[in-house]
Length: 425
Image (spheres, rainbow, N blue to C red):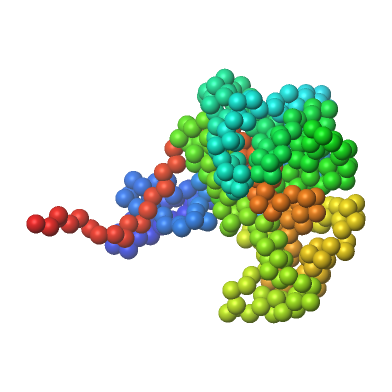
C-alpha cells in the first residue's frame, strides 16, 4: 500500500489529482500515474527512462554508488563465491540452491544441452557469412517448433522446463553458429564437462582433435556469463517482458530479446571496443586519440569506458579485470600489440583527471572484449556470447511476469501529426 501521496495541479482546473507514492525495498519512490488515464491524460517519457513499467524482485542497481544486486546478493560476492549455473538458479528461484538442489540443477541443465538433430538443417538456409546474431535469432525462435510440451505459459512446470532448455541449449546453439560460419562440423556437447568447459569444447574442438580445456579459460568464460546474467530492466529485458505480455511462447520472447540485444547501443559495446582499438591501430597513436576523446567537437568516442547506468564504476569491471589479467598470463599474450594498447588505455583512463572526474572508468565491456579476443572468439560472435549469458535473466523476468498479475504492454504516444482532414476532390 502507498504510504505517501503526490498531488498534481493542472492549469484550468480547481482540483488537484491525488497520486499514490510507493516505496520499494531500496531505491527511489515511485509515483503511480495509472489514474491519469481516467482524467484523459497520460505521461510523456521517451525511452521510459523515468517510468517503472513493472515491479520486480530479481535485480537492483544503484548506478550512482556502483551497486548491482541479484536477489539481494552483491555481484562481487557472487562472482567470487558462486558460478554461472548457481546464479542462474538464484535468478530463477529467488534463493541460492542447497547442495542437493545445485547438483540436481546442474544435472538437469546437462541433460538438455543437445538440440534436435533436425535443427542442424536450419543452418543450411543461412549464408555462411551471415551475421551470427541473425542466425541466433532464427534458430532460438525455431526452438518453439520442436518443444511443444513446454509452450503452455500458464503451466508453471512448462515454464520451468522451457527455462532449463533455454539455459542449456544457448551455448550449444552459439557454438553451432560459430562452427557453421567457419565451415567446421558441429561438436556435440559433453555432459561430463562444466557449463563453460562444454561451451569452449564445442567452440574449439573438432572430431579430429579434442584438446583439454584450460581451467583458467573456463573460469574466465564462466565469469563472462555470470557477470552478464541479468541487469534489471534494460532494453532487451524490457523487450522480453513486452513480447511476453502478449502471451507469446518463451522461445519467441527470448528471440525478441536477442534481436533487441543485437543493436550496437545495447549488446554491441564489447564488439565496439575491439573496433575502436583497430581504429587506433598502434600504441604510438594513443595520445592522439585521447585528445580526440576529450574534444567535444570530435565524433570519436572512447568505447568501453563509462556506463549509462553506473556513474562511478561498473562493479562487474573489477571482477572482469582480474580475469583479464589471468587470461593474458595463461595465454602468454601480454605482448600482443592490440592487448598492450588496451592495457595502456586502461592505465590512462584510471589515472587521467579528465576521465576520473567524469566517471569514465573501464567497464565490463572493455575487459570482456579483451578476454573474448584473447580466447579466440571472433568479434562478430561477442553479442551471441552476451545473449548466452543474459538468458537466465531474461527467462527469470519473463517467468516473474507470467507468474504474477500482468497485462499486455501498451505504451501511449504524444500525437503530433495532422488532425482529421478530408480526402481531396
